[in-house]
Amino acid sequence: MSTKRIKFTFPQDMVKRPVIYELSKNYQIVTNIRRADVRDDMGWVVLELEGQEDVITEGLKWVVSTGVRVDPIAGDVIEG
Amino acid sequence: MPHVKSLQCRECESTYPVEPLNACEYCFGPLEVAYDYEAISQSVSRDSIQSGPDNMWRYHDFLPVEREAAIDISTGYTPLIHAKNLGRYLGLNNLYIKNDSVNPTFSFKDRPVSVTTTKALEFEFEVLACVSTGNLMGSVAAHGAKAGMKTMVFYPSYLEQAKIDGAAVYGPTMVAVDGTYDEANRFCSELADNHRWAFVNINMRPFYAEGSKTLGYEVAEQLGWKAPDHCIVPGASGELHTKIWKGFQEFHGAGLIERSRTKMHLAQAEGCSPIVEAYNMGSNQVRPVKPNTIAKSLAIGNPAAGTYSLNVLRETSGTAVSAYEDTIIAGIKLLAETEGIFTETAGGVVISSLKKLVKMGHIGKDEVTVAFITGNGLKTMEAMGNFVNPIKTPPDYEAFQESLSTQSNGTSEIK
Image 1 (tube, rainbow over the protein chains, first blue to last red):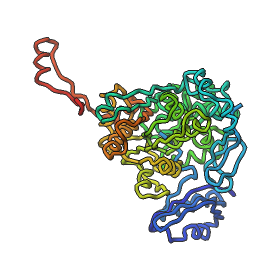
Image 2: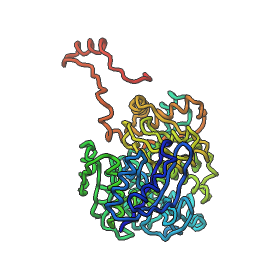
Image 3: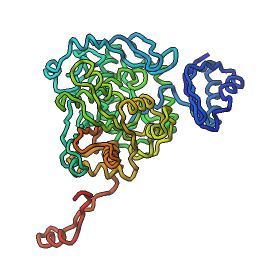
Image 4: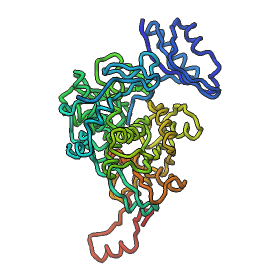
């Protein structure tokens, strides 16, 4: 089992979709939300994922395919 | 001993021991260094600072490392220039340029990297690492060399050769990462989680960020122990903006200057302006963007300190502005032609944004205003394009006189 700390950013058209529930249900990933700010026009959730490493990788690919942005919790680490 | 109490979460204020950590275990918020300000106030004075070295280590009391152990390539105490020519052009009598492009690796990054490298040795790391598209990699490579550390520099494989060479000369291990920007970003974040390396702006971020405070200290000292009325700071992660402000606040807390009423303005490029967009919408949420700007050193689409930069804008009544992409080169040339300072594209963003702020009426003509120039123009020559149109002449005096009278190559908008 491995864990991954991650940030999801939801665009307006994805705010109402239960993406985290679907991720947990369809990929057997334990989701543990630590901080969030969700509004009508956008939202972000910082959470920890726990599961098999390859399953987490597949799950995150699916999340990206829905239009939700996936980032490390530290934001962009590439600097100029 | 440095006057450090602990690390503290910027969100929930949980405290942690001083270790190479960057995220809170409870809320995953970012950590920063918490100091014993009473002890600092007792140990520091204007005299003690003025008797220190002519570099950033004169402010060691405010930094989270031992002065004696500093990995110092003589960074900081860079010139603060009264920009009379540019000021005259803009209608400002008290405009100053903080020229941080004259640091050892020609950018302000030497400040945070100097602190981080020192701390990395203190933590007994053997490897210093970063992921960068320019200024940071050169600075990490130079400091790693000075410290005698094994140094790993990761960069996106599409990077221009000149930038790669500028870091490679110091002898680090260079790693070109294939894939998109986002993929490289995620990959390096995972590397930091899985190796005991000092990744300067990931697991060492709390210490890294502290180095930028020295820009604020220097400006206040160089202005005669007072903070300016306005600062114009380039915005990438947003951290430089917050740390210059923190520098002014800490100087006030230590009794070195009066309370700062500085308006902390932020300048981003139009093609990557997530903080400006949030500011304009009155939001405290920063929406990540895909960068598309010639100001590559500011091309951070998901800024780590974006919300804290918004807080500083609100707290200081600062304004966030974006420079139109087609004005960035004009900004570079304007600074070069008026003050003899050749800056990189980030500096072009600052000068273009300064013009905008003046036009918007945010800066009074007699107010003390400091524009921060953070990198050297020779680093971004590719962005300048082919702008030289020389007068052509045979090697003959009469012909030269004729050429001079019939050809014009004036490029300055102020001449």
